[in-house]
Length: 138
Image (tube, rainbow, N blue to C red; front, side):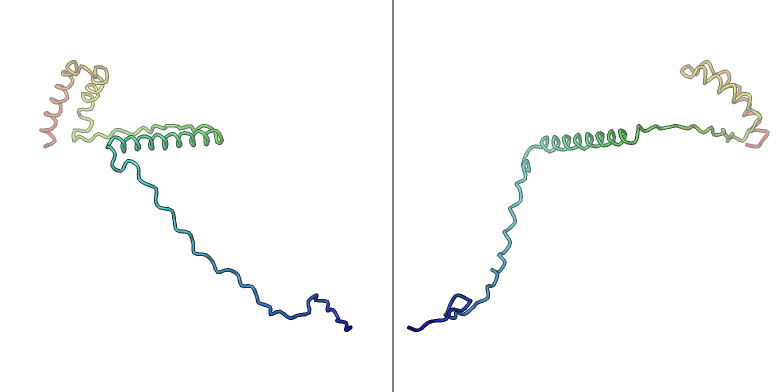
């Protein structure tokens, strides 16, 4: 009996070796169809109601964000500063009729709702302007 020698490979026959190729990539799945638009043929109030709800949600979100920022940074403090601007006399009479003008302004400040009580001061101011207007050539 003839002895066969065994190789360390374990098989005596030779098989052709084929390299395995990876499967080709599959085409991408098509995108899902767009969601149907609800209320496209709905009433006008349906669209208006949706706009109101969107506005409320946006306003509420903004208020929550403001409160969160205030909680972290502290409350906002607004300081109003008033700047006194000098009143410029824009008439041509200058300070000539300034006394009558001031008297009329004081009366109007005191009796703002009833200007008939200030008619006397108005007449005095007009007379002053007429007399000095002729002198100034106005």
